[in-house]
Amino acid sequence: MISEERAWEIAKKIHSLAEIGSKEFESSKLLVQALKEEGFEVVQGYAGIPTAFRAEKKIDKGARVAFLAEYDALPLVGHACGHNIIAASALLSAIKTVQRANKGSVVVIGTPDEEGSGEWAGSKIIMAEKNCFEDIDFVLMTHPGTEWSVGSPSLAVQDFEVTFHGVAAHEAATPEKGVSALDAAILTYTAVNMLRQHVRRDANVVIHGVIREGGVASNVTPDKAVLVYGLRSSDTEYLKELIRKFKRIVEGCSIATGASYTITPIGPMYTTTVFNEPLMAFAEQVLKQLGVDVVPYTETTKRIPRGSTDFANVSQIVPSLEITCKIAPQGTPWHSRDSEKAAVSDEAKKALSIVSEALARIATRLLTDERFAQEVKSAFKSR
Ligand SMILES: [Zn+2]
Image (cartoon, rainbow, N blue to C red; front, side, top):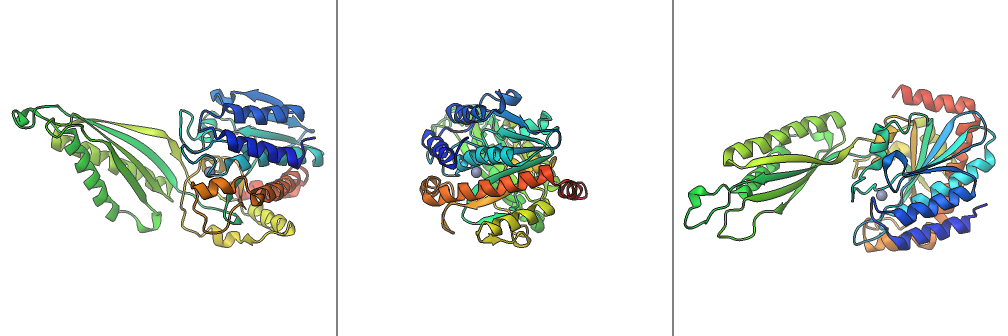
């Protein structure tokens, strides 16, 4: 059987590979290999995504619990989000659950490119759209951080690339013939800044953008300008309204300057996270039994959301739980050199062991305690 030590070796190996999103071929293979050794049936390239997989081991009739594994690193800073720990924990929790539960099935789904670096950005959303979670009853996972907690809220987000096309001309000889794509971009940037003041205050709106291209020579009218934006809110429906306003701004600036435009969404829309109270309450209880200090979910769920995750889209369709496990001291900046080091620290090793034990206990209860499983399901339905 794959030991905690072996799972830790895999976590360290994935850390050193540091493969970025959609290119996690070796990391994916390491997990697949380990799961095959444990007798899981594995489908590689799951959902048409080259570095995804689905592994399943049927114990007996009953429900299906899926552990989600992420294994993508970040450009420049490697595993500074600690996804190597997510991967090893999915593996270890699944193996422990198989040993303990006497019915149901245990599934591990390898979900690439959570960070949105490549072609398969937000792969959980792609999988959700392809009904990959249809036969899954419960979803469990962990994400490393600087505390032990459950119930971390997230922002819905949609990214866009806006390209303006103008007409190049000699800026001194024939400026009247030029149409500046840069002017359209700057006008857009300014108008979006104005939009920020007139948005719902309770909807945690965040709009962040850059001008990525804006011309090359001062004496040539820029005929191409590119903006990249991220629009976020803690209200998915309100985000859709913001997107409509954003598109009107781009259209307006195009008309004003005469530059034509294209707007392309970058990746799918990430939604907000749905919480499951019975799952959170039980997870808290288990973590306390395992001797860790847990921030109460009554506190975490009321926090202002600070980021986005494709796990949120899964939580909209299946009762789901994500445990934040502590691998670094509070205040450690994330996606940094410090968090990258933390992902192979002794604290990370300890966290991997504790969180895998916790997830296995939760999964085992979901598969074997019918009343608890029903309670979780009805809480999901009545959300
Ligand atoms: Zn992450």
